[in-house]
Image 1 (tube, rainbow, N blue to C red):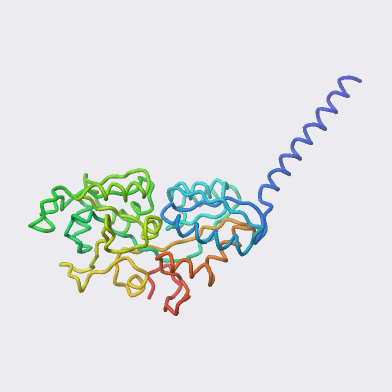
Image 2 (image 1 turned 180 degrees about the vertical axis):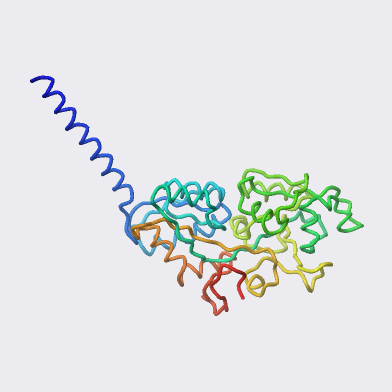
Length: 317
């Protein structure tokens, strides 16, 4: 009887463990549209935007608590595909291998366009070459132009150093895909650890160009082309660049198709039960969330200030 009794107790105990595990898993996502506790992932270039959005969202819905994870775009997507988060703010869709990871978990992710972001070029105030054309920038990134004297014969700044925030950066990926278009990169390109290091390194190096999302500058200071320790370069689609044909990465010039370095901003949402991740996604896509996007220096997809913007994954018309 004792062995039988022992096996019976062991069987019941095993069933209870399985039941507890299932219960714990089901209770891991017990949030609703406007209440609960969740984590989300966000490309660190949009830290200032997301901090502002969450402050207002949680003021509207006091029963909601959202913990943002600011990291590289690649890591933000990895957290989504591993079901550690169900909301990721990034600048691209999932690739086939990432989509397969979700499919293997019997999950899917919806892509929601919420804004357009400008990629800014920042330089040291000692650099007097504050105008540049897209063809020249492309040659710099490809290594065809390596010295400032090739841009301006009177420049004595020496070798051009181009700085990105990290190797998994959304800005670096954008430069590969949309500026260089798959060609070989210059040996004078450097990846640091985060966007704050890019800003600090440009402050130290008169010969550097930093590439950074425009929203990332908001934490340091309101975007201004005449900051005392950082300058924004004006960029032209035409060569040569002039004051008249060059523009800054502001929402209005992105909307008018004047500034050429822009990228879409997406929410990737894998929330099957319309929980708090869905509630935040809805908030960002509507009036209050879109106003915060505009105030953060990005171009919203709606018109909170009577901007004429068509909702599309392509360039706004």
